[in-house]
Image (tube, rainbow, N blue to C red):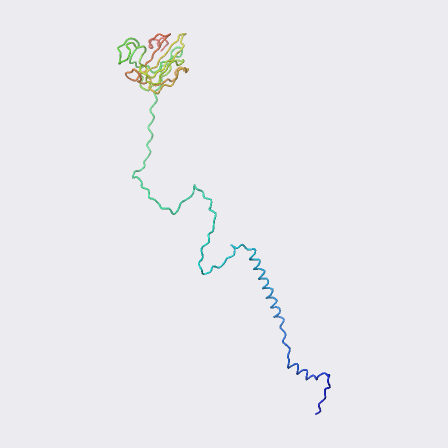
Length: 268
């Protein structure tokens, strides 16, 4: 068989090219889905880095929960504002309870307060002509006007008035309107606690005296204008006295006058 001569520069036969091609195979092409997977991984990684950066720069440090290591660390202190407490309603707990020793008495019904003693009546036996009245109820007299035996040491033998015994503490009233001209608010001997009132009656100057009042009971002062029936004090036993009574005097134009006769002349 004759072999054809291949001149220089002529294209090699197809079989020779195929042989060379088989001896040096081309690298296999990367599949298209591998490139897509790489691109997706790249994008995901980039987004992850950007997210971490934003999170660390915008989130407060105390909002990030850090997993504690096994090493024990000192606890951190947290300052919490104290709640506003209503001190009236504050209840203390956890304190020790101290037993209270109680007495063995029992509480019963509270007794009713005693009834107050009745005040002495101010009943005076009517008004005389011109509106006069006796200073106290005059049912009982213990001494009368005029000469007498001295009933006590220092007492007079001539009585310038009458002694009336309506009971200790009985209110003493002014026999008529007038002006207080003399008083004694303490036991000075003689008339003791007393008051003297000057009146103008029937064109005459009349003075009435109220002696032996209870100490501390005097209710009027010198210069005070009083009305008929106004309270002056209480029957007592101060001064030269043998017992609680009112010593009652009447002076008409400076002359001592029997109170019983004078009051009777005025319808009393």
